[in-house]
Amino acid sequence: MDAAAPRPATLLDVRSRTRASGEGTHAALASPIRRRLLALLRDSDTPCNVHDLGRVVALHPSTVRYHLETLRGAGLVVRQAGPQRGTGRPRTAYSASGRGSAGPAYEQLAGRLAANLADTPQKRATRAERVGAQWADDVVPATTGPGATLAGAVAQVSELFDRLGFEPQVHIVGADRQIALSACPFRAVAREHPEVVCSVHLGLLQGSMQRFGSPAASLLLPFVEPELCLVHLSPAPSTVRARSHPDRASWELR
Image (cartoon, rainbow, N blue to C red; front, side, top):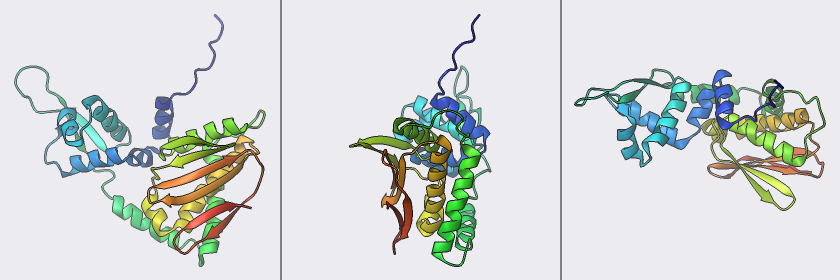
């Protein structure tokens, strides 16, 4: 029998790899609905089933179950048999695990580390960008074939940021492509130290493009809206330079 052609990776495959690689916590908490479900479970004195939670968040039980299983895969909730109600099999119930309850402490620690990365914002941005490029070496396989086209680069960048929990959405803008990132897992720290967190993401983007072998120009615009950052990919080769603003960092093509 001939070997079957490789099956294209599905979103479930990507999320499985994400959980296995230790990135699942950030990805799981990047979704507002999952954060709300986790908060409901932490506030509840008893385990909750998908039907009860679905009524609270106005979602179908199957959708609630999908989000809860994502949280469970990240180790943030546990699944158990619910209380017996009449005859028949008891409904499965979920409760929050102890893991992840130190979210504010994690953000405080990350903020301290960001603030002390270097003495000045510009030095912090430079070092953070280098860290992001090194991160790309860890999460993006090196290209062995022809370099990615613009369309290929868009697909690969979108898949990468989806794996990391940014919930990317691709839009066509003339000859360019725009990737909207609406769920940054590091948003709280990024607001306090954009010169560090956003520079890490810029380095990740640029390092990934190099590893994809794509000549497309890359541009990262953080916080174009309070909950939105944008990646621009253009077919015209160019360079990217960081420029600081009083309220946030931004990057423009030069």
